Image (tube, rainbow, N blue to C red):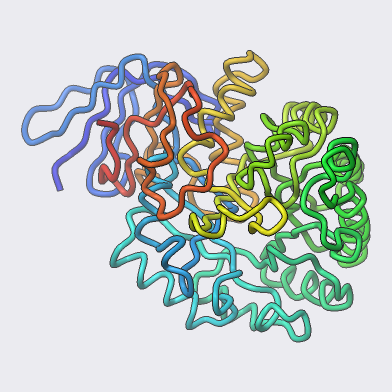
Amino acid sequence: MPKLLIKNGRYINPKTNQDEILDILIENDKIADVRKNIELNGSTQIIDAKNLWVVPGLIDIHCHLRDPGQPEKETIESGTKAAARGGFTSICPMANTIPPIDSAALVEYVNKVNKKSGCINIFQIAAVSKGMQQEELTPFDELKSAGAIALSEDGKSFENLKLLRNALEYARMLDLNIVSHAEDSKLSCDGVVHEGYWSHKLGIPGIPSCSESVCVAREIELVRQTKGKIHFAHISTKEATDLIRRAKKEGLKVTAEVTPHHLVLSDEDIQDFDPNKKMNPPLRTIGDQNVLIDAVIDGTIDVFATDHAPHNIEEKSKSIIDAPFGIIGFETALPIYLKVFYHSKKMNPLEFIKKMTLNPASTLNIPRGSISRGDVADIAIIDPEYEWKYDVNTTFSRSKNSPFHMNKLKGKTIYTIVSGNIVYKNQ
């Protein structure tokens, strides 16, 4: 493999708190040197990164790939290509495939398929319970040995609290994190959108905020009891955010993530009945949205995720009542987060990049998130000022379910590099 030299880029490495103009030399799959004015002769590929950010490869700890079971929606090949286009070098797919990823053999299957047809790293999240039936725990030790990075029932809340208590204790012994989909299904019932003014006015069944906060409250109590750790996925409400903030102040091992759509869309946007604005948790109020933004800034919310959830056109062409929850998000996450936090001057580049690299890596103990000498050469080269229009028909995903079709965006990945190999280049 020829050497790869990245010249003149704005090197942003949250792990070392560096933000300066430096060159990066890559040899084989590792970062060989980081300093000013690296000059080499011979067979060296050079990328001129002037006016671009050179950052650790982005990490998404919450997505869905639909493999095994639903290749018409997404495959490992199509999903990893879409993720690479968005600057992600590592992703953590959830376990709710068909069948669920509840055995070492299925974790190994994902890794084998990814090695053959994927283009970025997959760190699989496995199921907490066998068949995701919440009756019997999966073999956590075997799953970890096979490569599982965390455990979750995402798509379902933990209704069996005794099982969750046992899971937290078992996972603590293995230093694994439990990822929680905090939603009380009895309170959500058959809800479709956020329960509030707009759901009542439009006559659409609602999902109340308390369906999330009730779960967060009781799961925090189990963390306190077990001294385990839990990561709350796609937090969407003020009440849940306040609970997480208090738990962190107590020193409990609790982390949380937010997703792009909850920061730029609200329940007011469902007036057009667009099924691509149906997601779970639902779009909440502008008040919730502002609380989430503040919580990101003050550190209550640790991680930017995508919750990339592909569904085919036939499903998403149904009414907002009947269509499935979820949208795709790999290719639009970065510019949306840039809009909310960087272009608005709410966060500096180091703080911003930390939420997409170092923080997700440390949350799930993923051996990535840094671009220092000796690290694996997983790198994203980003133009934060690049203006473009998102046409969902050009996505690498097999699904097209995005509410951001034809939106003007600012900020784009120019190169994605995995283990020293360029896996995506903006044309």
